[in-house]
Length: 85
Image (spheres, rainbow, N blue to C red):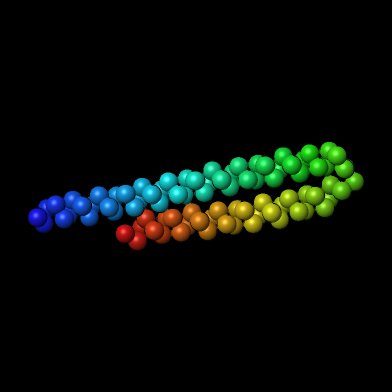
């Protein structure tokens, strides 16, 4: 009985760590795709209106920094979940 309880606990902890790792990977994938799309759309906008390149580039960098901050926060939360068990 005690052995089955320990096996069940180890299995749930392993699944929680696996879930946190999957979550961190999805966050990194989503952030990379989002920043890539922002960069591509900004280059397209600059190609259409070269005189607005300064404003477009500034907005692009601000949004990319916000996405990176959110992604870093999400990865840290996933790691804290996995290490706290």
